[in-house]
Length: 337
Image (cartoon, rainbow, N blue to C red; front, side, top):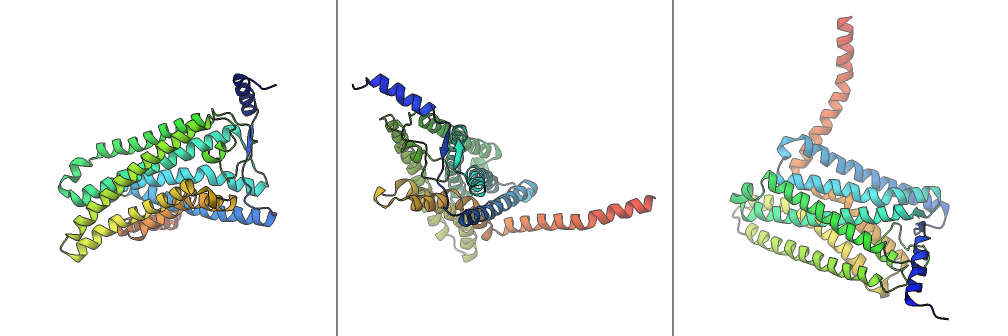
C-alpha cells in the first residue's frame, strides 16, 4: 500500500533525525598514506598559521601600516586563519586516528563556519578592489571615501553579510530530510555533498539558494573586473615608469588572490557532472579550501616591501629581545645583590 505524502515526509524526517554522525571521505586507503596526508596537512596548516599570524601581528603593531589597505589585509588574514582552521584540523585528526566520523552538530558547525568565512572573504576582496580603485583613480578623495569609520563599516558589512549568508544556507541545508545514508564524498562537510543524501524535492530550495549565490558572486566579480578596468586605464596614463610600477605592485597581489579564489571556487561548484569524480572533487576541494589561506600571505608579501620590512623588523625585535633581555635581567640582579 502506498504511503500518503505526509506519512512519507514524517518517515524521511525520522530518518534524518536518526543521523547522529556523518562519514567523511577517507583521504587514503593505506595507513602509510594516511600518515603522509596527516604530515602534509600539518605542514600546510602550520605554514598558514605562521604566515597569517605574522601579517596580523605586523599590521597591528606597526603604525606605518595603519592604512585602509592594510586594515583590509588584516581582516583577510583573520578570515584565512578561520577558513583553514575549519576544515584541516578535523581532516588531520581523522587521518591520524584512522576514522571518518564527524558528529551531526560538528558537521553543521563546519558548514556554517566554512560558508561564513569563505563568503565574507569574497565580499572583503570586492571591497579591497574598491579600495585600490579609489587609491589610484581618485587619490584626492581617498581620505574622505575611505576614512577609518568607513573602513570599519565596510569590513563589518563583509563579515555581517557572510554571517547571514551562512545562517541561511546552514539552516536550509540541515532542515532537508536525509535518507540516502550518511557518507559524504568529501573530506569536510560541504553543502553539495549533503544534498546528495536527500531523497525529497525539498533540496530544490537549497539549489535555488545556490543559484542566487551564483548571481551574487557574479555581481561581485563584475564589480571587481570593472574596478580593475578603470585602474589599469588610470595606471597606463601615469607618465613615469616608476609610478606605474608602484601602482601595479599594490594591485597585482590582490588581483592574484581574487583570481585564485574565483577560479578554484568556480571550478569546484560549476564543473560539468560528466568530469566529476571523488578523486577530482577531493583535489579541487583542497585547491579552493586549503591552498588560498596558505598562499595568500605569500602573494601579498612577495611584492610589498613595506609589509616585508614590518615583518622583518618585528622578528628582528623579538630575536634581539630574546637574546638581550635575559642577559640584562641577570646583570641587574647581580648588580643589586
